[in-house]
Structure formats: structure tokens, C-alpha cells
Amino acid sequence: MEDKLFEMDATGWLEYEFLTWEWWLLLSFFISPWILWIYTKKREWLVESILFGVIVMVITILLDTIGLQFSFWEYPIEFLPVIPSAFPFDVSLVPVAYMLLFQYNRTWKSFISAQIVMAFVYAFIGEPLCNWINLVCYIK
Image (cartoon, rainbow, N blue to C red; front, side):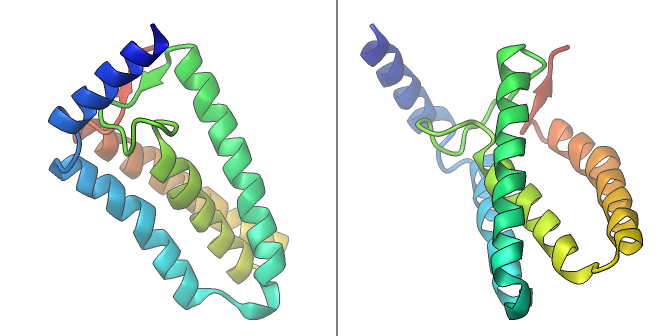
């Protein structure tokens, strides 16, 4: 039964989601932050930055999974049908932003200030934009 459901999901993904403009946007959300990070990383903070990014990834994936389980939101367009729905956001867009903040804001005051600005941008620009272009739908 599970195999049949996965087959139907994969078929629907291939027909209606794969290679749409929204899928290409998700691909750019997945690749672009890492390219930016490669060119702007500081070698002296490499290990700490990667560790911080992995911690942010784990927390982001956990919170996203909880939100999906409780039907707070859903993702109409999947990046790949075999991975979590918000993969480009959870392992690229959010963690890389935090890694860059971590690298370039070495005092607590500047780090917290930068996080407040980033939270404002994500909450009041990024989330409404993703909702408007149908990358995320809020249910509750």
C-alpha cells in the first residue's frame, strides 16, 4: 500500500511539480546560498560556522516537521518527493543565513541585532512572498 502511495506521489510530482517555475525557484533557493557562502566564508571560522549551521539545520528540520505534522502549513511544490518538503529552506536558505551572521558578527550585540533584522526580513518579506507565490500554504 505504501509503495502504491509513493508511486502515485512520485507520478504526480513528475507531472505537476517537477521543472515548473516554482521548482526552479526552489532549486535556486537550495544552490544560491551555498554558492554565496563558499565565496564569503572566513576560513578561520570554518569549523565553528559549519557546526553552527548543522545545529540550525537540525532545529529548522525539527520545527518544520512539527508544523507539518500538526497541519499548521503545507508545501504545495516539493523539491523532491523523497525528502522533506521544505528541504531548500531547511538545509540551505535558513542555515546559511545564520552561518553568515555567525561569521560576520563577532559580538553578541551585533549578532543579536543582525538576527532581529534577518527575522524581520524573513517574517515580513520572505514568508508573505513564499505564501503569495504558493511555495507554502498556511492552514492554521
